[in-house]
Length: 273
Ligand SMILES: NC(=O)c1ccc[n+]([C@@H]2O[C@H](COP(=O)([O-])OP(=O)(O)OC[C@H]3O[C@@H](n4cnc5c(N)ncnc54)[C@H](O)[C@@H]3O)[C@@H](O)[C@H]2O)c1
Image (tube, rainbow, N blue to C red; front, side, top):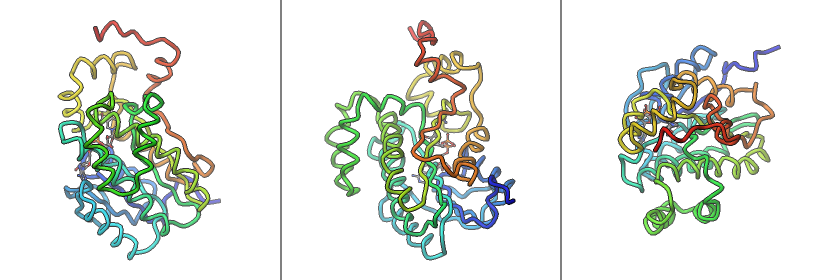
């Protein structure tokens, strides 16, 4: 019987693999026999891969060009929408890279994904409060057009009640659930991983935008250490593999139980005062 965790013979696409979680994922994929990995990033990756498409995921035309190039090369068995940016960048860039590009790649490559294929998004615990904004999230998800979606963001983001990064990850969590229905009808699963703060270069940006106090409190209220890029990457790889064949529409927490503790009233907020 074949190993359900193996990527042998599969073609894989990973966004955002120059550093952090995506770089960790390249190593993990190589260890589980992935030989055909295409990376989309602004920076060249150093980890194992066979094709690099330098792509600015904040640029609609660049994303469409990447989709055309990937589609021409053959089927895609697993798509990892992992790239992300923080609120150190403009709100339109945050929404475009973290949500619009992820959506465009998922929908643009779906026709090229065989039965048993998987889309895996890197969301975040930062998107955990999506229920509070479901009406606005649905309004934006209903806009297919990239430019019109950005016009909506431009008009509404100041009144949304949370930071653009948090909103982008709420969009990813709800989009993951919503799109999992049409994709499974085509035999393709869609899931996300929701990590708490990760020990990657992006954490420097989060310390700037969310404050050291917030990040350190989160860590101390979890298990006293950050999750590593590799610990997130192995969960991504699991969801993209045949081992998760009946898992669809799930936003899988990778937060050492922080959200569970919040939900059951066990988190001490005094450290935030
Ligand atoms: N670091 C954290 O604390 C944390 C927590 C939860 C979720 N996440 C999410 O994890 C994912 C990976 O982030 P990371 O922490 O590994 O950060 P990172 O900065 O190390 O990696 C992000 C990658 O995306 C690439 N990238 C950035 N902008 C791009 C663009 N416009 N076009 C193409 N590629 C671009 C970068 O070059 C880099 O390779 C992101 O979606 C992030 O939102 C991070």
